[in-house]
Image 1 (cartoon, rainbow, N blue to C red):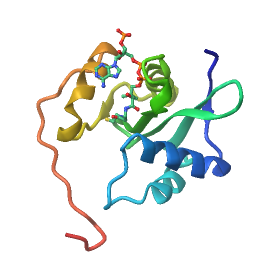
Image 2 (tube, protein in one colour):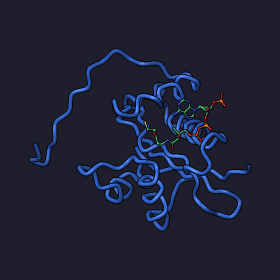
Image 3 (cartoon, helix red, strand yellow):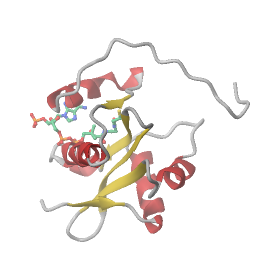
Length: 142
Ligand SMILES: CC(C)(COP(=O)(O)OP(=O)(O)OC[C@H]1O[C@@H](n2cnc3c(N)ncnc32)[C@H](O)[C@@H]1OP(=O)(O)O)[C@@H](O)C(=O)NCCC(=O)NCCS
């Protein structure tokens, strides 16, 4: 399978959000379309997509850095095409995006309900880091 991996464009929003939904990555407290627009084409973040030969988007990942660490979000491979290297290719592309910006460590969060995916990341060289993640909404939400 030949994949073209590149930065998404604004016109890809619908297809990418559809893919994220199909992969069970969306939650009621995040608006994936707003997340897409906020990350897209920025100096410190972007959304990368994999296109099949016909042009259809079959993979996506949001990547960004905070000036210190790099972060991967919303990694998705089209359900019908899972197990064919799309997910690994997206992680590789995100790593290359970070390295090109001088970021030497990539991190990501895995929901407890999705712990099965840890084995996928371990194959790609990630390891579980013993940290507690703390968070706070800055827009007044509880
Ligand atoms: C996780 C995901 C992106 C992997 O994409 P994929 O295209 O199926 O992965 P690949 O084909 O590149 O798989 C690479 C290897 O990891 C393994 N693997 C893939 N998903 C796995 C999983 N959930 N658990 C264990 N191993 C997995 C594959 O079997 C393959 O092993 P191999 O090299 O020995 O053949 C895809 O399953 C997906 O979109 N899942 C739903 C969304 C999700 O959970 N995203 C991660 C959020 S943290």
